[in-house]
Length: 162
Image 1 (cartoon, rainbow, N blue to C red):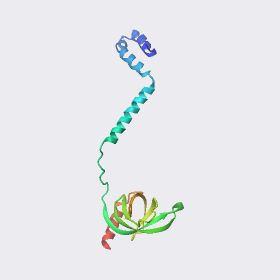
Image 2 (spheres, helix red, strand yellow):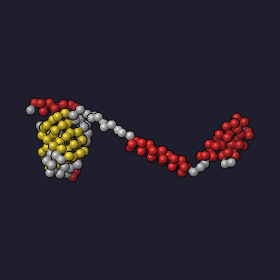
Image 3 (cartoon, rainbow, N blue to C red):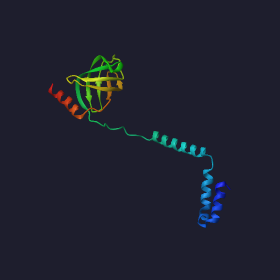
Image 4 (cartoon, one colour):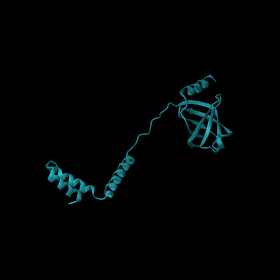
């Protein structure tokens, strides 16, 4: 019998109500005295099975979180230099825009920086952006911060006025 089991037996002789649960407690504590490596390996196996089940499960494609608006408005991609200095500007066409990002059309030969500022022609604000995906001349970007819905409304209104 383990040390814990022996101690429980002595306590059980003094307190009879504990002696009834003695065998269950002794069994529990003796199992706990087995190496903790068994418990860790068991948890690792469970975690691996759960992760594999997650990978094997068919997941639906996420729906768009933000409404997409057709814009077809010219813009500038402003390259960011050292200490956020701006230098080179390249023209682009903003095909669609959301609160979170946009789809740009650029020259297929253009080397796109991963981070830049986007300026929509007619609006004197620069929006920090990051390239998400590029397929030929189409570049999907995400804005570094969600743009204000009022700002987006202003951009869309300007598109109808021109």
